[in-house]
Image 1 (tube, rainbow, N blue to C red):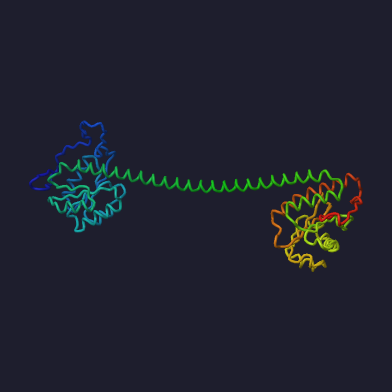
Image 2 (cartoon, rainbow, N blue to C red):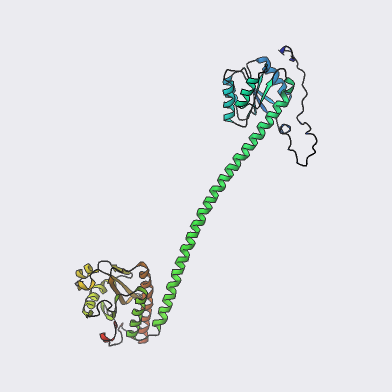
Length: 395
């Protein structure tokens, strides 16, 4: 097929090859600023060009020209075929301006689907209005064919280079966006892990600090009462120390005198200085001690008055009060029972429970030590006499 510029497309068996150059010399420069390499000089591998025209002769001529230049050509005879054959590997749409009445909408649809894909519109008639409309719709070039057929390959190469550069840039941008999203997710995950770790460290520090504080307190208490071998004095010192830690309260220590039998070893009368509460404390011991010998933990009675009424203890003494009781165990032997009670306006806290739990074990150790020192085969305490008037912390 040979082109006769004055008569349009003419079918022949052969066609003259039009020379073209993919690697044009960018020329020299006087400026010190480096010039970027021309985009049209970077077409790697064959491009796929979709030629859309209803003119079979024009389609064959354009196809032969582009195939000879090293490109692969796909043909479409109408708008529907164009839409069906716009595969991801199509680099360029070369479309006849007279393909359909909605050519501008077609160009916009092609560009909206894949913005990197370039569109060249061609027409045998030079029409400035059509050219402007096509460019506004997204076309990158407008060719007057067959009159400017010698420029076809170079302008197609330029459009393909732009298409591939834009596609490569968009793919890099997409990869960067994905990488940034992954980094953000990783950062958020690491931030969450750091927050959890900081919380765990803070919790561990608090626990260690509390444990060290308890150890320090137990050591201090052990040193304090370890010097006492007199039961009365040791109990007096113990109650004073415990009240210092848990605040003003009424308390009593019941010592084991025989199997299932407990007597008052020491007591604190904090609220009723003007009355003798010894009888009430004995009744309290008779009610509490049998229950506590079967419990190794700490018991708390929030409604002490109800507790007192149920066990036959003077209820007035415990009106609006809380009662806390615990057993001082040495091995499997309950050596003493501690009972503290005070008004519920100043309730016993969980922290106080930890303090009493730590101190009762030290008190049990010292009671056992006193028993060994006195070398008693039975769990009997040395006869000690005390006068209730001797102290408000009575022993």
